[in-house]
Length: 360
Image 1: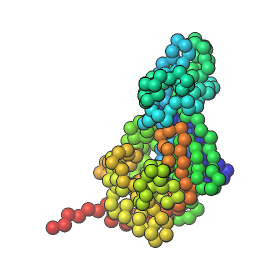
Image 2: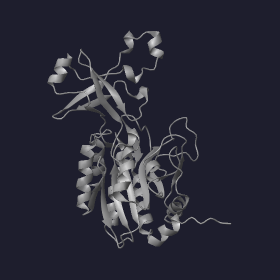
Image 3: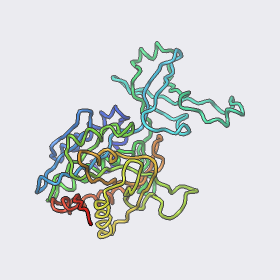
Image 4: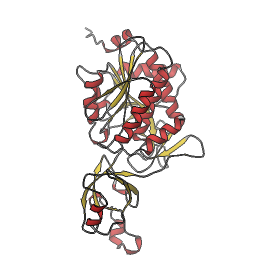
Protein backbone atom coordinates (compact mmCIF):
# COMPACT_ATOMS: atom_id res chain seq x y z
CA UNK A 1 0.00 0.00 0.00
CA UNK A 2 1.38 3.43 -0.98
CA UNK A 3 1.58 6.19 1.58
CA UNK A 4 -1.28 8.15 0.03
CA UNK A 5 -3.40 5.00 -0.15
CA UNK A 6 -2.98 4.69 3.61
CA UNK A 7 -4.04 8.29 4.19
CA UNK A 8 -7.00 7.73 1.85
CA UNK A 9 -8.07 4.66 3.81
CA UNK A 10 -7.77 6.54 7.09
CA UNK A 11 -9.89 9.47 5.91
CA UNK A 12 -12.60 7.29 4.40
CA UNK A 13 -12.91 5.26 7.63
CA UNK A 14 -15.95 6.25 9.66
CA UNK A 15 -14.88 7.29 13.13
CA UNK A 16 -16.81 10.04 14.88
CA UNK A 17 -16.08 10.63 18.56
CA UNK A 18 -16.82 7.55 20.63
CA UNK A 19 -17.20 5.34 17.52
CA UNK A 20 -13.59 5.09 16.33
CA UNK A 21 -13.55 1.33 15.67
CA UNK A 22 -12.86 1.43 11.92
CA UNK A 23 -9.93 3.80 12.41
CA UNK A 24 -8.57 1.77 15.32
CA UNK A 25 -8.59 -1.36 13.12
CA UNK A 26 -6.36 0.39 10.56
CA UNK A 27 -4.05 1.76 13.23
CA UNK A 28 -3.62 -1.66 14.84
CA UNK A 29 -2.91 -3.31 11.49
CA UNK A 30 -0.24 -0.76 10.57
CA UNK A 31 1.40 -0.68 14.01
CA UNK A 32 1.65 -4.48 14.09
CA UNK A 33 3.36 -4.41 10.68
CA UNK A 34 6.13 -2.34 12.26
CA UNK A 35 6.53 -5.08 14.88
CA UNK A 36 5.63 -2.65 17.61
CA UNK A 37 4.42 -3.63 21.07
CA UNK A 38 0.77 -2.58 21.29
CA UNK A 39 -0.28 -0.37 24.20
CA UNK A 40 -3.88 0.69 24.87
CA UNK A 41 -5.96 2.49 27.44
CA UNK A 42 -9.45 1.31 28.46
CA UNK A 43 -11.48 3.68 26.26
CA UNK A 44 -9.96 2.87 22.86
CA UNK A 45 -6.71 4.80 22.37
CA UNK A 46 -4.00 2.68 20.73
CA UNK A 47 -0.22 3.00 20.38
CA UNK A 48 2.73 1.01 19.09
CA UNK A 49 5.84 1.01 21.27
CA UNK A 50 9.22 0.57 19.56
CA UNK A 51 12.40 0.58 21.66
CA UNK A 52 15.58 1.91 20.09
CA UNK A 53 19.00 1.56 21.69
CA UNK A 54 17.71 2.79 25.04
CA UNK A 55 14.49 2.27 27.01
CA UNK A 56 14.38 5.98 27.83
CA UNK A 57 13.46 8.69 27.23
CA UNK A 58 9.97 7.59 26.28
CA UNK A 59 8.73 9.80 23.45
CA UNK A 60 5.02 9.91 22.67
CA UNK A 61 3.63 10.71 19.21
CA UNK A 62 -0.14 11.13 19.45
CA UNK A 63 -2.71 11.88 16.79
CA UNK A 64 -6.42 11.42 17.46
CA UNK A 65 -8.71 9.01 15.67
CA UNK A 66 -12.05 10.76 15.99
CA UNK A 67 -13.64 13.17 13.54
CA UNK A 68 -16.51 15.56 14.19
CA UNK A 69 -19.92 14.08 13.42
CA UNK A 70 -23.33 13.36 14.88
CA UNK A 71 -25.46 10.87 16.79
CA UNK A 72 -29.12 9.94 16.26
CA UNK A 73 -31.05 11.40 19.20
CA UNK A 74 -34.67 11.09 18.00
CA UNK A 75 -36.71 9.36 15.29
CA UNK A 76 -39.77 11.39 14.31
CA UNK A 77 -43.14 9.81 13.46
CA UNK A 78 -42.52 10.78 9.83
CA UNK A 79 -39.24 8.85 9.71
CA UNK A 80 -36.74 11.71 9.97
CA UNK A 81 -33.73 11.59 12.26
CA UNK A 82 -32.99 14.37 14.72
CA UNK A 83 -29.34 14.45 15.74
CA UNK A 84 -26.90 15.64 18.38
CA UNK A 85 -23.49 16.98 17.40
CA UNK A 86 -20.25 15.23 18.33
CA UNK A 87 -17.64 17.99 18.31
CA UNK A 88 -17.85 21.60 17.22
CA UNK A 89 -19.94 22.49 14.15
CA UNK A 90 -20.91 25.78 12.53
CA UNK A 91 -24.59 25.71 11.55
CA UNK A 92 -23.99 27.17 8.08
CA UNK A 93 -21.85 24.27 6.79
CA UNK A 94 -24.46 21.55 7.33
CA UNK A 95 -27.56 21.96 5.17
CA UNK A 96 -27.94 19.63 2.15
CA UNK A 97 -24.79 17.66 3.01
CA UNK A 98 -24.64 13.87 2.57
CA UNK A 99 -24.11 11.69 5.62
CA UNK A 100 -23.87 7.99 6.49
CA UNK A 101 -25.97 6.56 9.29
CA UNK A 102 -23.99 3.60 10.61
CA UNK A 103 -25.84 0.75 12.29
CA UNK A 104 -24.62 -2.60 13.56
CA UNK A 105 -25.58 -4.41 10.34
CA UNK A 106 -25.47 -1.85 7.52
CA UNK A 107 -24.96 1.77 6.56
CA UNK A 108 -27.66 4.12 5.28
CA UNK A 109 -27.13 7.20 3.14
CA UNK A 110 -28.92 10.33 4.24
CA UNK A 111 -28.95 14.06 3.66
CA UNK A 112 -29.30 16.90 6.12
CA UNK A 113 -32.62 18.36 4.98
CA UNK A 114 -33.15 21.90 3.75
CA UNK A 115 -35.95 23.89 2.16
CA UNK A 116 -35.65 24.96 -1.49
CA UNK A 117 -35.41 28.75 -1.95
CA UNK A 118 -38.75 28.84 -3.79
CA UNK A 119 -40.76 28.42 -0.59
CA UNK A 120 -38.66 30.52 1.79
CA UNK A 121 -40.12 33.74 3.11
CA UNK A 122 -37.93 36.88 2.99
CA UNK A 123 -37.40 36.51 6.75
CA UNK A 124 -36.32 32.87 6.41
CA UNK A 125 -33.80 33.76 3.70
CA UNK A 126 -31.97 36.02 6.18
CA UNK A 127 -32.10 33.53 9.04
CA UNK A 128 -29.23 31.22 10.03
CA UNK A 129 -30.92 27.84 10.40
CA UNK A 130 -30.01 26.44 13.85
CA UNK A 131 -28.66 22.91 14.24
CA UNK A 132 -31.37 22.03 16.77
CA UNK A 133 -33.99 22.35 13.99
CA UNK A 134 -32.10 20.22 11.44
CA UNK A 135 -32.78 16.59 10.60
CA UNK A 136 -31.42 13.76 8.46
CA UNK A 137 -33.63 12.40 5.66
CA UNK A 138 -32.92 8.75 4.82
CA UNK A 139 -35.95 8.27 2.60
CA UNK A 140 -38.03 6.52 5.26
CA UNK A 141 -41.80 6.96 5.43
CA UNK A 142 -42.35 6.43 9.16
CA UNK A 143 -40.65 5.76 12.47
CA UNK A 144 -41.74 2.13 12.20
CA UNK A 145 -39.91 1.76 8.89
CA UNK A 146 -36.77 3.33 10.40
CA UNK A 147 -36.88 0.81 13.23
CA UNK A 148 -37.44 -2.06 10.80
CA UNK A 149 -34.28 -0.98 9.00
CA UNK A 150 -32.38 -1.32 12.28
CA UNK A 151 -31.65 2.34 12.98
CA UNK A 152 -31.71 3.23 16.66
CA UNK A 153 -31.16 6.24 18.86
CA UNK A 154 -27.42 6.34 19.60
CA UNK A 155 -26.27 5.30 16.13
CA UNK A 156 -23.44 7.46 14.74
CA UNK A 157 -23.90 9.74 11.74
CA UNK A 158 -20.75 10.38 9.69
CA UNK A 159 -20.01 13.06 7.05
CA UNK A 160 -19.46 11.86 3.47
CA UNK A 161 -16.66 13.16 1.24
CA UNK A 162 -14.38 11.29 -1.20
CA UNK A 163 -10.58 11.45 -1.03
CA UNK A 164 -8.90 13.26 -3.91
CA UNK A 165 -5.50 14.71 -4.74
CA UNK A 166 -6.15 17.88 -6.73
CA UNK A 167 -4.44 18.76 -10.06
CA UNK A 168 -1.48 20.53 -8.41
CA UNK A 169 -0.56 17.03 -7.09
CA UNK A 170 -0.07 18.54 -3.65
CA UNK A 171 -3.45 19.59 -2.29
CA UNK A 172 -5.34 16.75 -0.62
CA UNK A 173 -9.11 17.05 -0.32
CA UNK A 174 -10.96 14.70 2.02
CA UNK A 175 -13.12 14.44 5.10
CA UNK A 176 -11.61 13.86 8.54
CA UNK A 177 -8.15 15.23 7.79
CA UNK A 178 -8.68 16.52 11.33
CA UNK A 179 -7.19 14.33 12.49
CA UNK A 180 -6.41 11.33 10.31
CA UNK A 181 -3.38 13.36 9.22
CA UNK A 182 -2.08 13.01 12.78
CA UNK A 183 -2.75 9.26 12.74
CA UNK A 184 -0.93 8.96 9.41
CA UNK A 185 2.04 10.99 10.62
CA UNK A 186 2.41 8.87 13.76
CA UNK A 187 2.57 5.70 11.67
CA UNK A 188 4.99 7.18 9.13
CA UNK A 189 7.39 8.50 11.77
CA UNK A 190 7.44 5.12 13.52
CA UNK A 191 8.09 3.36 10.20
CA UNK A 192 11.05 5.63 9.47
CA UNK A 193 12.52 5.25 12.95
CA UNK A 194 12.22 1.45 12.72
CA UNK A 195 14.80 1.54 9.88
CA UNK A 196 17.64 2.94 11.99
CA UNK A 197 18.90 3.17 15.57
CA UNK A 198 17.64 5.92 17.83
CA UNK A 199 18.60 6.48 21.50
CA UNK A 200 15.11 6.33 22.98
CA UNK A 201 11.78 4.50 22.96
CA UNK A 202 9.01 5.79 20.72
CA UNK A 203 5.32 5.26 21.42
CA UNK A 204 3.27 6.27 18.37
CA UNK A 205 -0.47 6.09 17.80
CA UNK A 206 -3.69 7.94 18.47
CA UNK A 207 -6.21 8.81 21.14
CA UNK A 208 -10.01 8.77 21.09
CA UNK A 209 -12.66 11.41 21.80
CA UNK A 210 -10.42 14.44 21.32
CA UNK A 211 -13.20 16.43 19.66
CA UNK A 212 -15.51 16.12 22.68
CA UNK A 213 -13.11 17.16 25.41
CA UNK A 214 -9.62 15.66 24.94
CA UNK A 215 -10.78 12.55 26.80
CA UNK A 216 -8.31 10.01 25.42
CA UNK A 217 -5.52 12.44 26.27
CA UNK A 218 -6.48 12.14 29.93
CA UNK A 219 -6.33 8.33 30.06
CA UNK A 220 -3.60 7.41 27.56
CA UNK A 221 -0.59 8.91 29.42
CA UNK A 222 -1.30 6.45 32.25
CA UNK A 223 -0.86 3.63 29.71
CA UNK A 224 2.23 4.91 27.88
CA UNK A 225 4.13 6.83 30.63
CA UNK A 226 5.73 9.47 28.37
CA UNK A 227 8.76 11.63 29.19
CA UNK A 228 8.23 13.87 26.13
CA UNK A 229 5.13 14.27 23.96
CA UNK A 230 4.54 15.44 20.42
CA UNK A 231 0.86 15.88 19.61
CA UNK A 232 0.22 15.60 15.87
CA UNK A 233 -2.76 17.63 14.71
CA UNK A 234 -3.92 20.18 12.17
CA UNK A 235 -4.13 23.92 12.61
CA UNK A 236 -6.28 26.51 10.89
CA UNK A 237 -5.06 27.71 7.49
CA UNK A 238 -5.72 31.41 7.05
CA UNK A 239 -4.87 31.77 3.38
CA UNK A 240 -8.28 32.22 1.79
CA UNK A 241 -9.57 35.32 -0.03
CA UNK A 242 -9.76 38.30 2.30
CA UNK A 243 -7.29 36.85 4.79
CA UNK A 244 -4.36 38.93 6.00
CA UNK A 245 -1.15 38.18 4.15
CA UNK A 246 2.18 37.62 5.84
CA UNK A 247 2.87 35.12 8.58
CA UNK A 248 -0.58 33.48 8.76
CA UNK A 249 -0.57 29.65 8.36
CA UNK A 250 -1.08 28.54 4.76
CA UNK A 251 -1.08 25.36 2.72
CA UNK A 252 2.37 24.60 1.35
CA UNK A 253 4.22 26.75 3.88
CA UNK A 254 5.73 23.85 5.79
CA UNK A 255 4.97 22.10 9.10
CA UNK A 256 2.97 24.04 11.68
CA UNK A 257 4.30 24.53 15.23
CA UNK A 258 1.80 25.74 17.82
CA UNK A 259 3.24 28.45 20.09
CA UNK A 260 -0.07 29.13 21.86
CA UNK A 261 -3.62 27.89 22.10
CA UNK A 262 -6.34 27.97 24.74
CA UNK A 263 -5.10 24.79 26.47
CA UNK A 264 -1.30 25.02 26.47
CA UNK A 265 1.81 27.14 26.23
CA UNK A 266 4.39 24.63 24.96
CA UNK A 267 7.54 23.68 26.83
CA UNK A 268 9.91 26.43 25.68
CA UNK A 269 13.12 24.39 25.55
CA UNK A 270 11.41 21.66 23.55
CA UNK A 271 9.84 24.24 21.23
CA UNK A 272 13.16 26.01 20.65
CA UNK A 273 15.01 22.74 20.05
CA UNK A 274 12.54 21.73 17.35
CA UNK A 275 12.81 25.15 15.71
CA UNK A 276 16.64 24.90 15.75
CA UNK A 277 16.59 21.48 14.07
CA UNK A 278 14.13 22.70 11.44
CA UNK A 279 16.48 25.57 10.61
CA UNK A 280 19.46 23.22 10.52
CA UNK A 281 17.65 20.96 8.02
CA UNK A 282 16.28 23.89 5.96
CA UNK A 283 12.72 22.77 6.67
CA UNK A 284 10.41 25.79 6.52
CA UNK A 285 8.11 25.96 9.52
CA UNK A 286 5.04 28.02 10.30
CA UNK A 287 3.95 29.29 13.69
CA UNK A 288 0.39 29.15 15.02
CA UNK A 289 -0.89 31.31 17.86
CA UNK A 290 -4.57 30.99 18.70
CA UNK A 291 -6.56 32.28 21.68
CA UNK A 292 -9.24 29.61 21.15
CA UNK A 293 -9.25 25.88 20.54
CA UNK A 294 -6.85 23.28 21.80
CA UNK A 295 -5.41 19.81 21.27
CA UNK A 296 -4.63 16.67 23.25
CA UNK A 297 -1.43 18.36 24.38
CA UNK A 298 -3.57 20.44 26.72
CA UNK A 299 -4.15 17.36 28.88
CA UNK A 300 -1.01 15.34 28.18
CA UNK A 301 1.37 18.08 29.33
CA UNK A 302 -0.31 18.08 32.75
CA UNK A 303 0.23 14.35 33.40
CA UNK A 304 1.78 13.77 36.83
CA UNK A 305 4.73 16.16 37.30
CA UNK A 306 4.31 17.44 33.76
CA UNK A 307 5.31 16.18 30.31
CA UNK A 308 7.19 18.62 28.05
CA UNK A 309 4.90 18.78 25.02
CA UNK A 310 4.65 20.40 21.61
CA UNK A 311 2.03 20.36 18.86
CA UNK A 312 3.52 19.64 15.43
CA UNK A 313 1.18 19.43 12.48
CA UNK A 314 0.04 21.08 9.25
CA UNK A 315 -2.29 23.88 8.26
CA UNK A 316 -5.72 22.77 7.03
CA UNK A 317 -8.60 24.54 5.34
CA UNK A 318 -12.29 24.03 6.21
CA UNK A 319 -11.87 21.78 9.25
CA UNK A 320 -14.95 20.90 11.29
CA UNK A 321 -17.01 20.59 8.14
CA UNK A 322 -17.68 17.78 5.66
CA UNK A 323 -14.52 18.57 3.69
CA UNK A 324 -10.99 19.76 4.37
CA UNK A 325 -7.70 20.38 2.57
CA UNK A 326 -4.03 19.96 3.48
CA UNK A 327 -0.74 20.08 1.59
CA UNK A 328 0.95 16.76 0.87
CA UNK A 329 4.39 18.40 1.02
CA UNK A 330 3.60 19.91 4.43
CA UNK A 331 2.74 16.46 5.75
CA UNK A 332 5.92 14.92 4.33
CA UNK A 333 8.08 17.70 5.77
CA UNK A 334 6.42 17.36 9.18
CA UNK A 335 7.23 13.63 9.20
CA UNK A 336 10.84 14.34 8.24
CA UNK A 337 11.19 16.96 10.97
CA UNK A 338 9.81 14.69 13.67
CA UNK A 339 12.07 11.81 12.63
CA UNK A 340 15.15 14.00 12.82
CA UNK A 341 14.14 15.57 16.14
CA UNK A 342 13.64 12.15 17.74
CA UNK A 343 16.94 10.81 16.38
CA UNK A 344 18.68 13.62 18.27
CA UNK A 345 16.80 13.09 21.53
CA UNK A 346 18.49 10.98 24.23
CA UNK A 347 18.34 10.57 27.99
CA UNK A 348 20.85 13.34 28.72
CA UNK A 349 19.21 15.91 26.44
CA UNK A 350 15.76 15.28 27.89
CA UNK A 351 17.06 15.36 31.48
CA UNK A 352 18.65 18.72 30.77
CA UNK A 353 15.48 19.96 29.09
CA UNK A 354 13.26 19.32 32.11
CA UNK A 355 15.72 20.58 34.72
CA UNK A 356 14.61 23.91 36.13
CA UNK A 357 17.00 25.63 38.54
CA UNK A 358 16.05 28.79 40.40
CA UNK A 359 18.57 31.53 39.75
CA UNK A 360 19.37 34.09 42.41
